[in-house]
Length: 288
Image 1: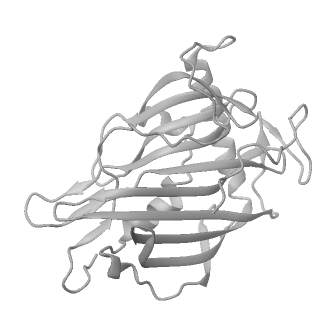
Image 2: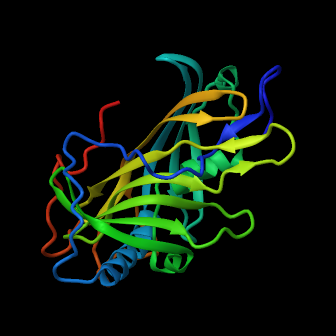
């Protein structure tokens, strides 16, 4: 990572502060600290993590377009901007492939920031966060109550990594799980750890973000919109950053991997039995 001439050396990372200011949406109800009725929190965790494992496999059977915009601001004036649009697909070995369709010259350094490989990995992997059964041993998961998100009633959990291993990065924050489908429908949090060198001015600070999901093909909840709007507090200056990531045009394609729902294969174009239909109001992302 390189700094702009005459400026501080910056990249995008989250501060290690708490989750004091959760974003509130117009259709979000109050958080109710009540236990679930028909299952223990541990049973709910096992159910939604198994669904997430199936979803992770199913997602590799879809192509989609991802649009990224990162801005630095002075008040409401944009001082620097990074944009990229690329199409995502997976081969039969679940290897991710990208085709860049739009990538103008970045002016982000004019706002005092530059992006490194960790930033791009966060955009691709931690903002559309998936928590599978295989991932569970890495995290502490705390049930905090129930909350209404638009037309969806959710169980709410706080999660944090048990420990930081090597250079590996993790998600820390809050997730909302649909109490009907037992799937994650919304996440809010940050990537950890942040990096502050003991010597010199180099710091890696990332904004807090929220990711909303919607049902695709009546089966799984796919990420559709991520938004970050945060103040990054560096040693020598505060930087206001806004980040928007859109995931669009999900299309299923044929391959050797089967899409499963509750352990059963779902034929292409069909919906699982007794599955609620997608509602255009459910978890709709906020306007741009």
